[in-house]
Length: 281
Image (cartoon, helix red, strand yellow):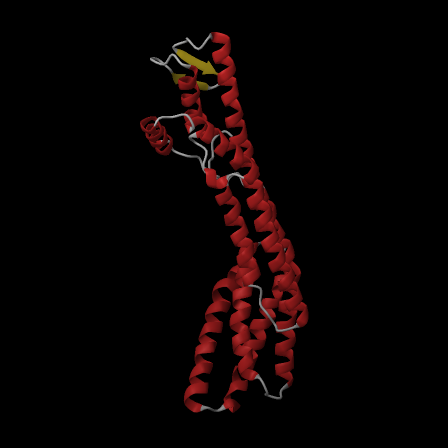
């Protein structure tokens, strides 16, 4: 596989060559010696152009070539001002590789966006978004206006995708919370039908003991704790947050001080669900 060779041998040769050139630049200050390295550089940049022949360029291979390109670019900058036909070949090779990298970046970033939109958890989606962002950051920059324009577009798209995916996960979380809160009314309906005298209530998958309670408000309090307790207020959209706050305010409005503190304590002890929850919604 061509890219395996390029990943090991080429990188090592470039690093070794860069070290040699730094020694020359620092100790001998003789730029006339630089052309002796030109044949090696030409061969290496030609090998980089083989990226066009790779049938399946994924983000890993892309990172691989981009890193080597950056290393080669640092070395080629040392040849600035030297008049040699080989220098022209060198810059032409580097320009060709850069264009290939540009041609693949949007497709590779979109692959990560597609995966991010399908993420089951916010963490999974954010990991994919971060991979897309890293791809954008590692795009070699040649200083041209066209590259500047593409980077601006990609950065803007990255921000929009982050907002879109975050909102999508918040909407799913808020929908689950709204359904949780709507089930409180089912508990109340059951209480009215049963006269509020049953020792326990089972509605759908709601199961809680009400032994020792004989008043409707005690049943409702347990339902609010059970159904609202797992909801984390910080993840709710504005409208759903308002509903949650009204339910809690209505619940505590007529409580005595000791009842309020007991209710608040129990509510605080319940483990909340976040947007990385992987169970059933």
